Picture 1 (cartoon, rainbow, N blue to C red):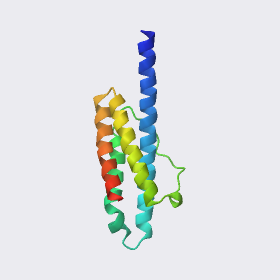
Picture 2: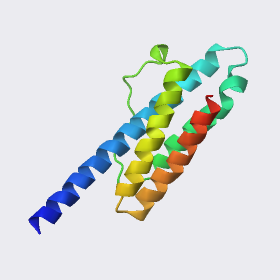
Picture 3: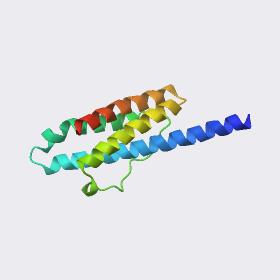
Picture 4: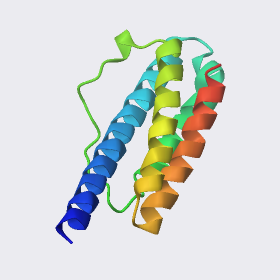
Length: 127
């Protein structure tokens, strides 16, 4: 019994860490893409699809009932590049699929999978 409870606690802790990291990464990605789009004359045309998917992924994940995290404010757009965003989108997609596998709540699972879908589309839009 104690071992099973400990396993559930570890699983929940891991799930929470993955979800929080994914939410923070998506929020950062969204801000960076929006910043890039605003800096170029045709930026919203060039970055529009990627920005839309970043927003959708972020909003989908925020629907997870178990997620109670604040959007980070300590990242700066100046350090990001499209390559970094591509890598980040791939990492977020993988993390969200892992979180969906760990989720006990069906609504958490659905939010993770929906966000993963948009994060995957974001990655494709950044190619």
